[in-house]
Image 1 (cartoon, rainbow, N blue to C red):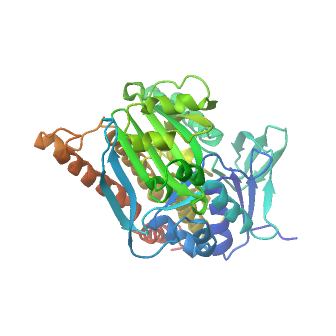
Image 2: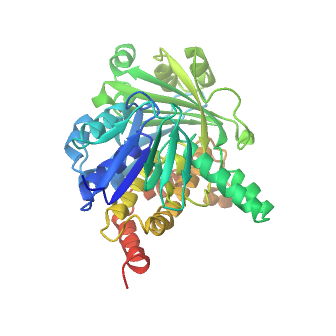
Length: 452
């Protein structure tokens, strides 16, 4: 049996890793062998909800997934402006009204993360090679341009290229940046080595997210007509806010309560990143919120607390024949609903690059530099957008126009400035399509990889 032209190893079977496998299957005309290594004993997803915007939807359509994903969306997407999240100032304790409703292409398409992952798994091609209980613990690149991976069970595997889609705690990133820091130190650049060491592990944002799923039927039985049953909502307050939106065709409400300590950003997260907590711990921070928000919180039966970490300004997504994808490269807060979408965009651009006829085992490093130059500025920018948006929701960041006007942030005028800031920040999710990025990537491929 002839050897494949290209052997691609994907470490991580989440949304990003699965999407990359599907992009390679859809677009590659050459012989590419794809092996996906998942640390758990099967495909599964943490978290509950995903928001899909126009940029992501465009890629899903190209993959032929619009029918399947449209069926699990609360509101099937329509290529027309639709209302998305509604925003309320909720920490005064008094009843209030929605002060803003964002209007965007498709509005907010919300789906259950596990439902979407199942669709991606079901679409994997026949004969696709998946390997479970394979936690990466080491990799090396040799002078024959082969990446050798070692897993926790003692087994090894080889590939021409390794894609680390292994999440915010990515071992691939950890190993890559330890090696980069050691190389800088060996070259006598101690300052650069210390800078690179800062990216080995993600940094805590200072925010905890309390997650729960609420049965819509339970909410409506207790509070008939509650708008959270049908409307994506954000209840804002100083230092904390609540996000809710329907998922699973409206049967469930994804509910997240955020509590932030901005002064702790960048410090070490104490204790586990994810832990189950009593429902009272999730509910109590919002005792002073308006009735509508408290009614929703009262429906919580169980909850978990997540320490939210991110990776700001990663200086490179690739090193040699190893590349980072998704949260391993640009883990971000959830504040503009872009994390899953950005992982899918990584998969789209990287998959298309690797599918190009001109790309082969001899020029993979150059091909990965194209991926890095296109995706890194975008991914890193989304991290910053999401960070500033979260601070603004909790009135720890005041938009510049509001500062210049000298208005109280929570006043009616201040909320108008906040609404403008929300819209401008969120437009990155739909303002342009990723085809523009692919066109730029093709130009770079032609300049640096095509035969002269």
